[in-house]
Image (tube, rainbow, N blue to C red; front, side, top):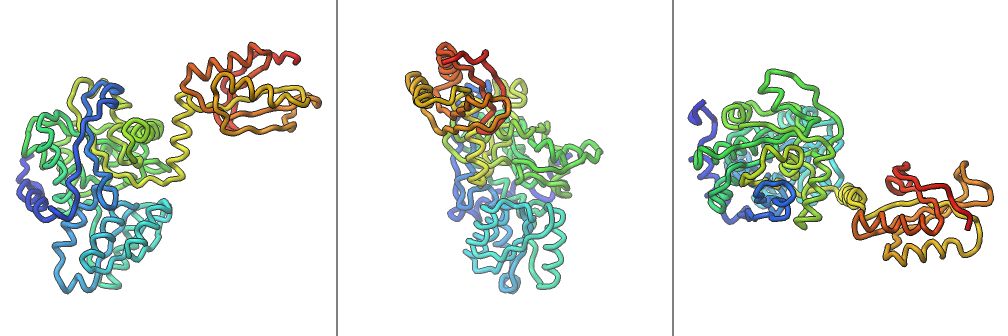
Length: 422
């Protein structure tokens, strides 16, 4: 299919780039050697999480708002969004003096709701997802005469998002592959159009949450079940765009589905290795490399870190679980005689092995523990898995039976021998 048949062309994207210059950050595209070593690809990262609202949505939102006439600006605009589009519309509408109403699903993380309200928009919570939020937004738009700023199915939005590829290929012209998250398709459509116009041989790979394989299903003529709680809430879209789907069908080589475990690990790795914040949707590209390393091995790959608006509470759990998965935080349970000095003795052994005790609990309530014994549970920071195993082995040599748990209050994953009397 020729690019001429699409609603957006390279000239539209270049015009959008001129419009946003000086108002939207030209984000860096930086080599990521540690991710390269991990995945087998030569990885570069486009840091769209550095935008003012921490996502690429600033681009398309500004291009659309600049197109609105003076009379409509006075009346105001409305958008439906799970968070990032909401914040971008709110931010740029306030800059331009345009009243903005944002309809968000009731499940939207508090951090995104709060950020949107702080940017001066009126927030309405409606429905369990974008489809219900859209219906409410259309209702309010009719009642109040507001202009709709669609998150993805609008030529100006698509053109604005496509400006990213202009920057990537200007900074790293030897890139082989762009790996781009897919929700409704505005981001990947705009970037596929721009990239293919500049470098026809570049490969475009899309990434969807396995719980929301909407674009893949649409292009395959299927109607896959889409739904559920996903870490990648920013791309949890059940209905792809009518303007974006033909672009994806024509220009995108493949769509990779990633599960929740891969998304969680990708968020963790962006923080731990790259020292940068990525929300689940923003980390989807790295999740694809983790899920299918052979698909990208040896290629020069640019990952679009499309957003960094992660809920701090969720991030804290991801980091703890990631450290636990690497053996850098462990939780162990030890049964001991209920006698003075035993807690200090065990803590001393942990310290002697250079373990850092983060938390300790002491109890008698487990039914399998004899009445004159007690249990100790320690959460301990260690250097790595080898260090953790060495610490446990030391305790067992001293006669303690050690049960390793999945986490504080979690189930058993590793159990030592019978407890020796002390």
